[in-house]
Image 1 (cartoon, helix red, strand yellow):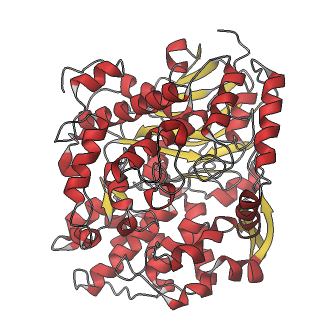
Image 2 (tube, one colour):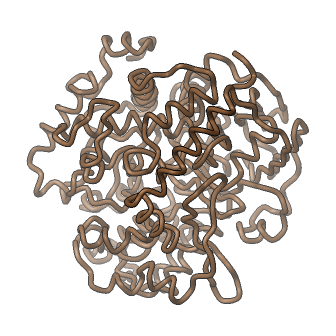
Image 3 (cartoon, helix red, strand yellow):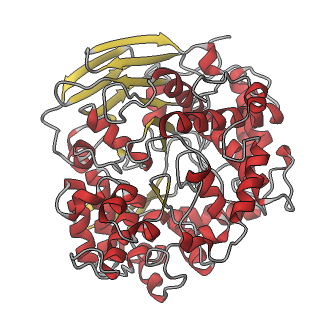
Length: 586
């Protein structure tokens, strides 16, 4: 293939135990998985031994861009992939900002890191020059300290990752977060504190004139009436624009999902935040929406809470103190810890106290206690030491009926979209645990992807499978989901045309859908290999199934749609269709 294909063409392979650095070509076989999540899935599946310790030297962590990264609108993203210490299956997290585009400008599509360093380490990348530096001076420091002292694009962990908190995140210098599945703990286990990148190269594409035409076409569509209304709201209020509507739909977690309505939610709304604390909006690379919020926190300008954070650390705790919500968000960013999981853990602890399972006083709405507990989680102290292992392990340790309200799927705490509105099956079958980014049937069933044969009347199982397969592709390209179908202004046809113009390929919609199915199936196989995933794991807490008595039937319909067995195992026929080898352990 021509080098004018949107790729930088090289990846970096680093073994921290051996202090070795290698540069190698991005193979055609890996390119067949496009990039980002697809390539990371293939590398993780092939490169790690069965049942490896997620926090041990044999696990790898992969930072991967895609062919669209930096080459078109909504494309300033990268993906982080590893075995998750929280779930024991494949973990991955997507992140915006500028770091992914900068990595490609340095001449690399991705980084594969294995081993454990002898001392805290800084990977420094400046074009072809790559060094392993001593990061001891930064160890123990928070993200805001790094922001003040490092003038290059970086991704890093805070103290939570250093302490191997299993819900630790990776934060970049724009305070964007690769938040889910504990990727920060994997970095911490390798004593890898920070990766800085600086580059000045330009990625070449196959048909620049066609790409320019397609980019203009999609950008112009963003100005259509409905798209413009949505984008204007994101520009003004960020992702928090959804907060009030979601509450009206009873689509957010309140009091650890015990309630469906809370009048005080208006006190922590995006409108209140804009009125009292807003400073300016900001954009990720090549973004035309600009959903980032910079707000005032005392004398500092910091990243403002997103929709998920407003719910997880607000409504989930009955926390109506906006100032304390901002403090909780700031602490999560500084410690490097996932806001969704943090809110889920604290809400779980509050319900444990409510039910008499723990003695530490944690009353609903006590935001000061929530702040104190968050610090304990990051530092693995007191009750925080139990919660730092993730909600599933915490519930097992606390015992009693705690597991009934430890809201998770496969060990991953629930995001802020109510399972009772149709997300139950989507969460239960997601490849990384409870995941709102692989399928949202309560919204997307009314925005069918016609290129994949979906209609408004399509079954729930069909909608979820279709969107899971499509979102795997989006995370492989990589694009921001606010800009793409079904909810965004870029259609599936637009995106395939852009991919083909950049790479010189000739993908059809059917071929793209099948590739998404292949990657999703490979993720399922990884979960079976590492954790024995089966039907028993595709489940959700009883609280969410009180009004859905048909969950088992829906799950079986989903398995049939996927061509999996009644136990949730991909069939030989499916593996053959997708050109995947059947492993000897299956």
